Length: 301
Image (tube, rainbow, N blue to C red; front, side, top):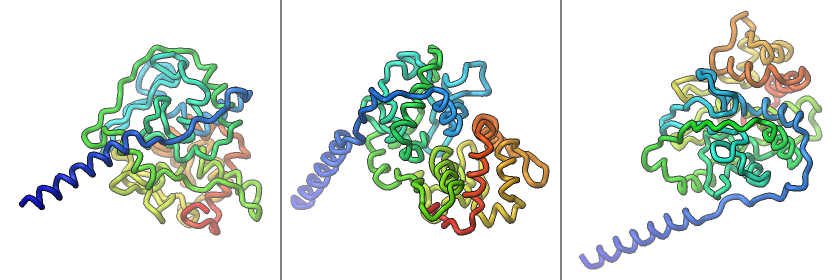
């Protein structure tokens, strides 16, 4: 009996030590970008491509853009996209460019706590220092709006942010975006957009019970999106079977029109409305080239 109590006490102590370690375990290092000059116009373009406006604005309200998005209902609880205006308390006005870079590329808040993966930071890790500086310059031009949209509503244990550090270790790596010398310029640009900034895999990939993207199911579709939505497979063979060709897909990303003449549903319709229709013809073409390349492995390499 005493031995059992001793073992139990040891396990409790070990668990407590592990929990404490998670709390103090640092994630992400603040970059030094203060001296870098940003191009606000290019940053605005990147913000459109990255879906910032779509996620952090609520079309169902009369609030200005970027003052916070509509609540996202998931099996883990409700996530509320925050205010991204320059207001010092309601938004990101008190942040430095280093805080911004760390948040976007590493998923770490200014106070050092990890963000929930409802924020697709894993897909933004490839952004360069110049990309970050340009995005920062664009957001600095957004008028301050004192709009408080509320906070996430998550039950135990998902409300314990320290546990996200374990999630990051297992699932936080994004798909590859680096250029391959043997591929065309269009293919590499499309890969950079699809696998990275446009984060297509965030919706078009099934997730496991922990909310991590399923290995081997990249871009194969998902029937478990927030609010009960679904997204079809956008793998090359499936796109071709659905009637898509490069020119048609590039046009679809601009117009929302599908090969059968119908239009995208609400989720993808929002993506077109707030993001892909604003891209250049060259970037939409590049995305279509990458997505319809049958030699691209399922994991996006």
